[in-house]
Amino acid sequence: MKLDYIIVGGGYAGVMFAHQLIKNNKSFILISDGVRSASEISAGVCNPVVLKRFTGVWNAKNEIETVRSNFSEMETYLGQNFINSENLVRIFHDDVERDLWLKKSENEDLKDFLDTDFIKLKSVKNEYLSGRVHDSLRVDVKAFFRSFYSYLEKNKLWLKEAFDFSELNLETNTYKDFRFDKIVFCEGVNVNNNPYFSNLPVKGNRGHSILISSDVEVDPYIIKKKFFLFKTNQKQFFVGGTYEWDQTVLEIIPESVNKLTSGLEEIFDKEYKIDEVNVAFRAVVHDRRPILGRHAEHENMFVLNGMGARGVMNSCFFSKQLFEHIEVGKDIFPVVDVKRFQ
Image 1: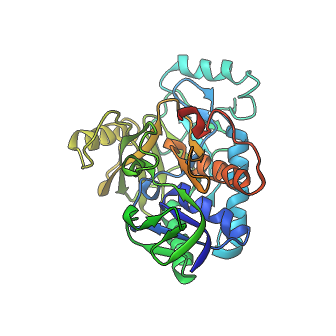
Image 2 (image 1 turned 45 degrees about the vertical axis):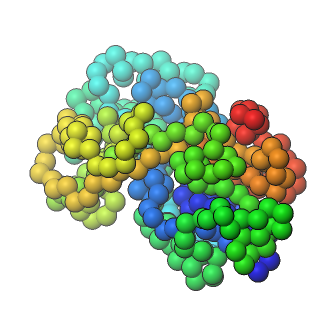
Image 3 (image 1 turned 135 degrees about the vertical axis):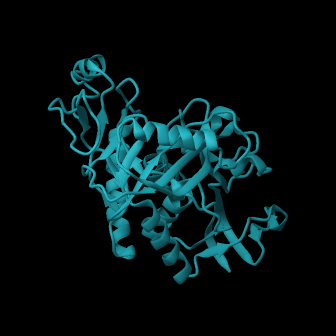
């Protein structure tokens, strides 16, 4: 079978690049083993503000606009828009944080995002009130991936298996029975096992999250103090996630789960039950920028990786940028270009 593209990897980067191909009528196959990626258990929160010290996220406005447009485009073939437009609210630890928020709200890059009319949440402890972040939103992650993969499977666009590099022939541009023009690797932390891109400084940042059930009604926001808290369905809530650097073992760590429950109980004093614990490695880069672009030696080979904790935002924007770079020669931002490591 002759294809325009092969995509390797099925997290946010892979599916968002697939969307660019669907939108532009390109033929492709996405190869992924179907094991849940870090993307599929993520919070799916899109937030233009670094909430620790209230600073702006690089390229945030452009990225959130692209998230909205991408999901609107996908609605035409998935039949649903998976964006939940509830805003994020940050619970203040003390008066000092609240005053800092007011001061930072005067900055040019933050004035459109930081609401200075503070909120008193009813369902959780917030003695010092909470600040609302405009233009923040979240994606219904579970429903989105289920729907997208159902579409791929129905249209025979998904090869459900681990990619086998021994079957890749770059002289004939073939993989098994597929002939392709271009191949794009979107493997997350698995790029470290890729013989063509294993030199890239992509590391795994381990993150734990939990799903809890409770009969309590919670304010209709993405609530954040130490961790996110938001409703996923009638009685279930997402709590997460941890950021664990320099870890190599992918297993559930009781200490990390305890951090999540302790952080939750600082603001939530109602009864709850842990339904599910999830853990995964986010693909991160030391300079906190994604990596995309062409391989130094193979003209038809590309990488899209390092989406980090802002996977939805980065993947929507930079999958589009990579596609336009490949197809019409538009420039890639130098700070994300793979050339910085070649």
